Every structure is written in C-alpha cells, then in structure tokens.
Amino acid sequence: MHAIRAIPLPNVNLIAAYAIFIASYIVFALGKFPGLKIDRPGAAIIGAVAMVAFRIVPPSQALQFIDFSTLVLLFSMMLIVGNLHLVGFFEWNVKLVLGRLNPKYLLPVVVLASGFFSAFFVNDIVCLVMVPFVLAITRRMKLAPTPYLLAVATGSNVGSVATITGNPQNMLIGSFSGIRYRDFLLHLGPVAAGGILLDWGVLHWLFMRKEPAAAPSAPLELPHLDLTRLTKPAVVVGAVIIGFLFGVPPAMMAALGAAALLITRTTDPHKLYEQVDWGLLVFFVGLFLIVGGAENAGIVSRLLALVRNWNLQRMDVFTVVVALLGNIVSNVPAVMLLKSLVPGFADPHTAWLVLAMASTLAGNLTITGSVANIIVIESAKPDVQIGFWDYFRLGLPVTILTLLWGLLWLALVR
Image (cartoon, rainbow, N blue to C red; front, top):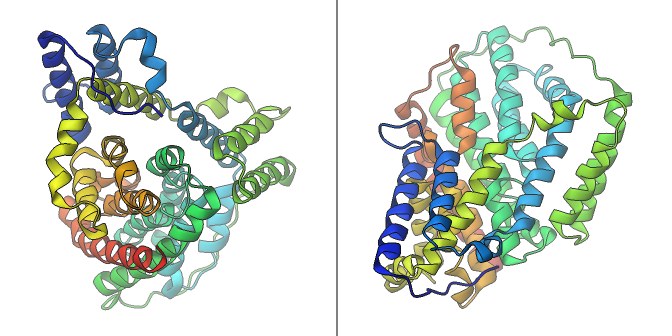
C-alpha cells in the first residue's frame, strides 16, 4: 500500500487539498452535504475528482492509492452473498430457525442468528433479510417488535467483528495488515462470541424483565427452497470459507467463488448485479483517492501528529480514539485515516486487531454508527418507528460492555 509522504504543493493546491478533505469528511460525518443532495458516495466521487483535478493526486499516480485487493474482496463477497439471497438460502434458514421457536427463546436466537450469519457474510445483507421475518414473527406472536429489531442491528454488528469478511472496515484492515483470515478469526471470534452474550444480556435487562409471556403460535410455513438451485452456491460458499481458513488470500478466494457462481444456466446475471452495492464500491474508490491526496498534502501526517502525544500505543486509549472517531466520521473513513498510524506501533499486529474491534463494536453506539443500524431502522418503517433515544439506551451499554470485553480479551492473548 502507498506509504505516507508529503510532496511539495503550491499554496493554492494546498488550500484546495484542505478544503476538499474537510468538505468530504463533513459529508461522511453528516451523511449528506448541508443544503445539497450529496450523499457519502457522491462526496467521495467529487472529492476524488477534485484531488486529481488540482494535481494533489497526479493522474499518473492515482491508481497507486487504490487498494484493489479490498475492492475485489468486497465486490466478490457481494456477488456470493447476493447469489445466496436470490436462491432463498438466508430466508429459508431464518424462517426455519425463528418460525418454530417458543417465544421465550426468540430474543437470544435472533441475536445469535444475526451474529452468526454476519460473521461470515457482509452484515448489511443479513439485516435486510432478518427484518421482514422478525416483523412477521413478532406480529404472529403478538410481541413488541422493537427489542427484536434492535437485536438484529446490534447482533449483526457484534458478530461481524469475528472475520475479515464480516464488514467493509474489516476487509480494509485485512488488506492493509496482511493478517490471515484464520488468525483474525482466532483472535476476534471470541470477542464476537462474548459480545453476543453481552448484547443478549443487556437486551433482556432492558426489555424482557417485565414482558408478559407470549403464547406459542403455530410454526410459520417455510418458503419453498429449490435444492437444485442451492447445491452449487452451498458448495462454492463452503469451498470459499475453507480456502479462507487454509490461508488462501481472501480476495483471490472470494473472486474464484464469485466467478464460479457466474457460470450458470439458471440465474439471471442482471439480478445478481442488482445485489451489488455499487455505491459502496464507488465510495471506497473515492475514499482511497481523497486520503491519498491528504497524504500527499501532508494533512494526514499533521492530524496524526496531533494525537501522537495521547499515548495511542496504550490499547485502552487507542480503543477510545477509534470508537469516537468512528462515530464522528463513520467507521470506514476512520479506518482509512488511522491505517497509516498503526505500522509505527510497537505491536502493530495487536493494534490492527484493536482497530478492527473498536471500529466495529463502536458502530452500536448510535443509529448512524453503522450502515447495518440504518438498514434495520429504515426497513422496519412504517410498521415500527425507532428513535434516537430508543436505540441509544441500548447502544450505549452494549458498546461499553463489548469494547471492555474486547480489550480484556486482546490484552490476554497479545
């Protein structure tokens, strides 16, 4: 990956670099530019083009700032998960598990299912699949849906910390750090497992203590699952995960799996392409160039110099900084800013793991802390309205407890 090195720039270009960087990160923080309909991907495109137009990133060097292995991994996982979605794999499994439960077991199973699926697949898709089934089951059981929807959001965030493929920021960290998939799982899998238990405990404490017992309902009728369509995706996904665990580079293994799934006589490829979050891919490309321009202009090195006196090599201090920054500008832009700091740590391996842990678990603090939260809240409308404080009274204790557990575990195994 391109190393930080400021290059001499005329004053006009330097001012432009600061303006582009600040304006872009304002949009990343707020979700849109005040007064304009510019969202995060749009800001990333505009910022990247401006960085090149003002020669802050020379056109001949632009490709050097883009980490293609991260893009390939993200795109390939979207195709793989999208294929499973199209053949009904997630829907069938979720309904199989949730549709035959006694109501008193529904909450822990929702948390566990959300976390388990999110550990191996991108958590955004898991949330999209889980929400309609949670709404249907709670309606049938005459239960208040809010606790179970919050369980989907927080459980998917916590579970996604376990692997490189759990969420976009982990994919970035996996590429920058060179940590192997199995190593990542061995260190952060227990953080996810303990975090799921903590999440369930807080949910139960807040919502279930005074909840009247619901009567068991008839099992939901399972949707038809065409096993002939599922066999190939299941085999490919199994092979991809085994490849990850045996040390094949994640981008290459995921790309092989995605390519294999595109060789088909039954699935319309256009439907598969619709499963890809093209806006997220564009956002990544633009962000690479914006941060690359900030590196060239010396902005990143100046920002990092401001925090070097905070003793960031202490795991607890670094965790707090990552958590705060992730909630201010979003987790992916935060990781992009801090990636240049970690190699200089005395123990960069542990620092990368702390960055992954903190940037992911801190996403549970507020509704806007992660894309998964927003997906759950928006997908539940108009049936259920979940406000900022409804979420925050769960998100705050879950975030604090899971971060403390993550710190304790990484301190023990470092």
